[in-house]
Image (cartoon, rainbow, N blue to C red):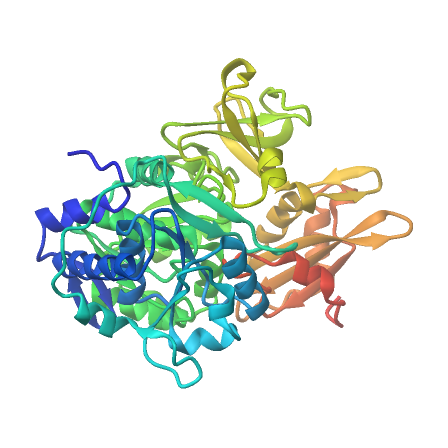
Length: 522
């Protein structure tokens, strides 16, 4: 039977491989039968306590068995899961709870201090479930107690269809309030199938996930693993990189999803930490294209691995990928459209542009979100009539990413529309300057922003992180750029940093860079 709802993936796999290990976390192993049974019990408890079809359940949990059980349980209860990043700030947490209209809140008791009065943020039935008890929040129900009390339960009703919402994923909201991306069961199944059509997970794989499961890249690791009966090894996102590598060796990891941030940290480790990883057969990366230096480092670190560089956004999960065979031939590209998805570049009027022209990336396919929760204006701005011959009965996603596409259909990311730098009459994509910076040996990370300038309009400022032992000066780095870039693109100021600020999903926080004054490193 073909899965039509997202949680069918777990149910079907548990029926086929009940005793296979589904999850390894905190040195404990949980098989598929256990995860299926416990999520059934929690779903029953949610329904018995008043949770109805379509109601939202917010989940604020660290990577754990509880987080996995809660995800599947909410779906089995025909409710909508709203995963929230454990690193979220208190004000944004209250906003997400109120904005989603959450009727339930499943939370690590250690994180409750981020919400002064969770009960006041919830709508009826206002169900608060904690992983433990708390004197300050005595109204909460202990999750483990709830599971024990529902050990014998009736079969769960099946009312949802694939058009129903499965999740609301909140974006990082770096420029304001987070936006709630609405994804149906159909959206999420389509995304998992499309991505796995080229990654090809195997039942014998062990997949390391050190990404928060509130982040779609982390969440889909579990979804794809559970679809094939493989094993997910969960780690906390704050784990030190050398400890992460040791865990990879101990657990015999074969699949390693990473982000460029983590890759930059690995590049700064001493060489003896970077051995013994020949068992990794597949590495994937998303968030930004991999530079030539990052590709070369990844190939040395994982000599047996196929490397997939991917690109996407929460609103459609993933939209492009760069096949391993094209890593060098199409260096700098974020790849071609993922299976069953169409992408193109459009001008400000929505008209398709020819190869080589820069414009906004547009995505069409089954993975495209249903819209933003309780935000019809922003939904209308991003989801517009399109498709074949501009059909008005179909909505396509306008991403806000400035890209170009070559004659072979390979996409090159240039900038977020809001990040374009306007200097000396030029529209400058930070990506072009960052690529030049990263081509200097020893530069492991770089970020470029525009700063107000009375004469130029904006001046280009670069922030650079060097590998251990490198001692390039700002003047030397600027000279390197001057030899490779047109004069208007050469940074006017360069600041050396030990690290770059990150938002809650691990991406470089350009807003934070703009907010901080320069240092003596300029």
